[in-house]
Image (cartoon, rainbow, N blue to C red; front, side):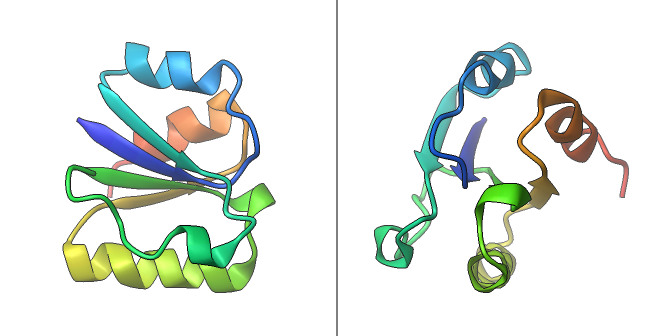
Length: 91
């Protein structure tokens, strides 16, 4: 599995915890510059948006791109507890 993380300048221990959770590839974009994320990499299986580090327009744009690619998208704050709950939320 692979995940694209949008938001946050540094991931810290989050990257290691995601690998422990089964994510083999982790792509990260800080989200500060909109032009840095024109397309979602083809190998991405899911998207995680760190809501406390991106603006509403980028969140909305990611939601549209995820829907178009039929990729699940998760929204969480930049804390492992919040990320864990978002990834394990039953829909």
